[in-house]
Length: 279
Image 1 (cartoon, rainbow, N blue to C red):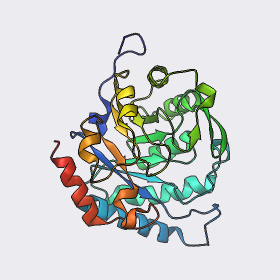
Image 2: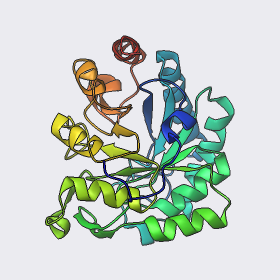
Image 3: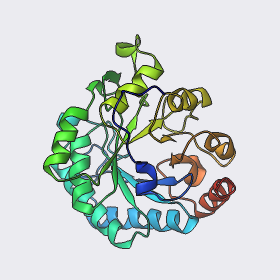
């Protein structure tokens, strides 16, 4: 890409996950207190569920873990993200950090980047994911603005320079009509200009395969690492990772391919065998 977007950075992906083509396994948390599907379970039950999924992912060979409040549907807008959700995710994250052999990241849905940074600071996580870092879009939750300006100032106040930002260029579950006059290359540059560390190429919704054109369109205009955020499978791993620098993998690694079910250790091992062949 042409220069002048942002001063060159060190490769943040290698910094947080020092391996070629790193794979981040998803831990989809059970319904947390305050969410519609929460039925009064103890936080310890949520911790136990997350730790078991983490154990299976680590045994299968993933390089990193990411916790997400996936069961808190319908997701609130960032300004409505509850204190009780932050508390529960932190409680899970503390125990996960104690047992985990691999780095951890945080995603708070929907696009609640400041709460994610607070959790990351408390549990010493290495990154947070932002589904909309710059500009704006219409999501299932409504109008969502880019989080970057407030998030970077908040991160600075917490002395959180070690927390890296993984930013979606085209977020899942949303319409980009607001910025339809800005090309993929321009939106890629927007994310770099607003100080993201790693860029994410993704499909239209959870489990959708990310198109090679989307990955290439971002990589050709980026100086930052580009990873894939949805739709990775054992069957397409080699194809996608021949282009992408790494991936976040969730649904495929679960029993029956459903994000809400348990991690399937054997599926993780087979998937990672495909990845190892590219390293």
